[in-house]
Length: 433
Picture (cartoon, rainbow, N blue to C red):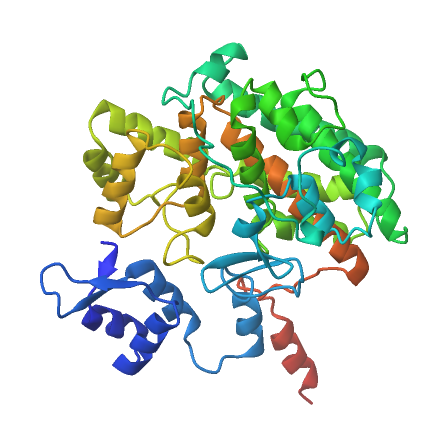
């Protein structure tokens, strides 16, 4: 059951009704009208349980410290990105607004704090292209019908690349891991080096990852914008603008699992490539970066029966519904909204979105939008993974550069919960006369 009554929520939280309502008004707990009795409200179970875990009054320092490592609580100070009032900001600027005109290279210049003219030196081929410099606030011309000519088959690019199914995702993942590992073995440590040199190296690390995932022999040269390289590699030049927008929206998302892994590695003085490798390896796990595969399974189930049954059976298995809902966005993921408004409706994806909201109260996340983009524009099946990894690499590198400046090892303490060590007993014994 995804929703709880007020009585159930109050029982779990052990708070007064006013506190429950205050958490709803602050966006910490999602609520919706009860269809049976519109005078009442229902409250999202996951939000209530999360608040219950956090609302324990004044706790001991070690307990607070351990819980600070859990999802939703701040861990490290950062000036790179944040989510506030249901919107994503890159250094104080709305990411969805930046996506209207900026390239991924523009966002890299913004997040890496490149000096004026430095970006043109790092990406010489991008300087004369039809992209805006985000740090100067250049606005975009109207996009028009960005999705014109899209299909709903999702097969054209996959067949043209000579592969399909899970092979492409596995190939991109393995190639990225191998390429980053090779650099990690030889690149210089990050500490003690000039910031400008590190930014230039960051551009090389990004190029290395893109090379590995789409191939050095793609029609666009290595110095071309990443969006152009992907569009040509996928024979999807007609959808270049959508690919560009997606990369911008994927560039960073606060201190998620992959970003934290990157910062931990960099805090040891490891090279930028090693830090990105640490972040990239987290994408092997289904809980971060694996939503595309899980959603593909849900789509297959919907095609085999229908969307309502597919969602119902998925929820009955006690699995988290993939590509729907995000704790930071109770009113819906703005990144998904920014892309979906430019895309045609695709089935059974649209039917699954309706069923997910009706049965679980969940709205589409960026993972859903990536799946619709892939299906609508005939991109290869690895497109969601490649777009996520290529875009997020810019954010990983931004956090790596910020961590180098911090020059501090990230070393949390563990709150030991194992068998008794006997140390205290030994001390008491020795203290006796």
